Image (tube, rainbow, N blue to C red; front, side, top):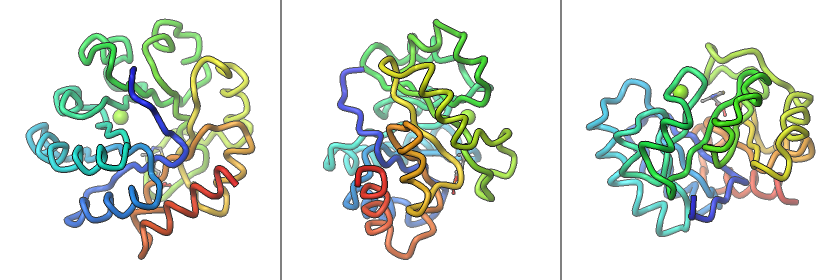
Length: 206
Ligand code: TZP
Ligand code: MG
């Protein structure tokens, strides 16, 4: 990975007609990573969304990732995968050394997978808290889980957390050692995505 990766405030998108507007506002507010996540979209649909979002992200020095779909991620800056998706080693092989590869952690045992850790650029503790945005998510880690993961990989890989994070609790997530917070609703459900992103940035880096 040769890109500068600013994980402090990381937006995971949810499908909506005005996605580009929300992403642009969030970028203005200081989002450093945008992950395009749409479980129902085809690869062709994801690729056309990437083509529209990538210039926006690059204009703000931000990184655009795609959830799970390697063919679409090849047009972006990288991919985010979970434990049930393509393995990080295979993602790295497919996308090459310059791509960003992120990996969701739902179980501490994943940290025993040395090859996966070597292939990744960051880890995402998922979910830190229960969230209506992803009711099917695994058991929540809580802040203790964030601390446990950070203790295992500190100095090796940056760690972000996702699930139920907002401007009120983002400071606690950073205080537990996370390098950044990933959010869907704290930005996407806000009337003012720019202000919401800016508030998260202040909460993470007061
Ligand atoms: N993965 C784990 S929790 C989650 C995802 C995609 C959704 C997070 O949404 P929100 O609205 O920020 O709680
Ligand atoms: Mg996935």
